[in-house]
Amino acid sequence: MASPAAPGAALPPGPARRDFYWLRSFIAGGVAGCCAKTTTAPLDRVKILLQAHNHHYKHLGVFSTLCAVPKKEGYLGLYKGNGAMMIRIFPYGAIQFMAFDQYKKVIKQHLGISGHVHRLMAGSMAGITAVICTYPLDMVRVRLAFQVKGEHKYMGIIHAFKMIYTKEGGFSGFYRGLMPTVVGMAPYAGFSFFTFGTLKSIGLAQAPNLLGRPSLDNPDVLVLKTHINLLCGGIAGAIAQTISTMVQTLKYVYQQHGIRRGLYRGLSLNYIRCIPSQAVAFTTYELMKQFLRLN
Image 1 (cartoon, rainbow, N blue to C red):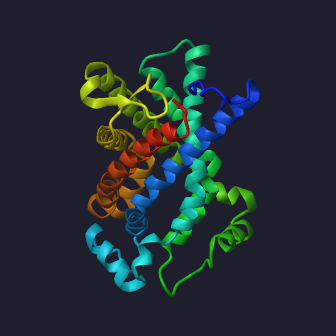
Image 2 (cartoon, rainbow, N blue to C red):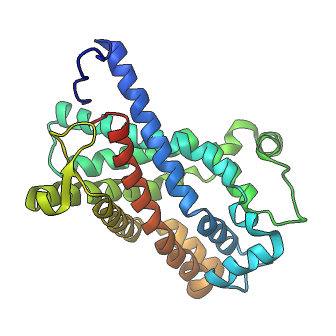
């Protein structure tokens, strides 16, 4: 719940105040998502190129591809598809963080489940909700990121939407492959929120002076210090990535490309990118909560 406003600056009572809180929560989550994905955008591009075995880079490793892409496409080539990513990730991050807070309240109030378990449940549900709402944008982003210079099938975001809709079965074409994504996201988001929330609550309970400080918007609320936030977010990302292995996807990649050329490439890069991504996401969200007076 938002902290009481100072005299003379009170927010409107009732539904208007709740709507304003939802808007601020939405913005906080969106900014957090954008900061996280911008941080790891080059690794996201490399991941797509390697896992899809793009013929220009399939013989290279992660770091070799990071060096090869700027030589062939310029440094902005590492951020190809990032415009579509930002259009997708702002609502994705906003929906995920906001849905997590709401699901957590519903699970506690209506199901009577609290403690650490409700974080796991709420996180999984929030991840699924965000994926379903933004999956078409993610599909377009992947299509654009897979293209290399001189071999463009899509001329931009709008053109990609038109082509997919026209050539791949209309609206249903945007949700091809949704189920494996949902199956992977549910445990990833669940354990990510679960791990971060658990580390945060234990840390502030056991070592408040060492790990915490008063919130900028509400001195009565204790929050983690920024570097501790980054550490907890990174740990949360690593643990979530470890647990969220998608059996069907792994089986498919193994059958098509084997362990070394398929599974190894995708999983090793996922670990490299998920740790800074989750660290930045949770830290930015915690800072935005203070900036937008959500504590």
